[in-house]
Length: 80
Image (tube, rainbow, N blue to C red; front, side, top):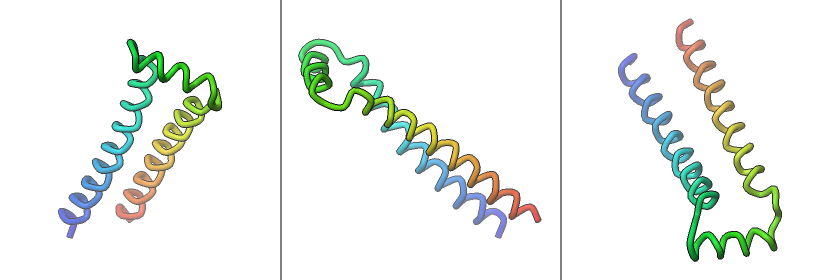
């Protein structure tokens, strides 16, 4: 039972990490884009909400914190 629980928890945590990693990679790619892609992104950014990337970054940080707290609570309840 312990092995199954921890394997499922590890699988879920790695899925969350993969999603987070891809979103962070996309944000960094947009932020450091150069050439034509950078020009198009900067032009698009002029006409969109300027705080959109910062807001998405904050959401990602909040998401990480919530998941860390949730995993900690799950492990704490499991230890009882």
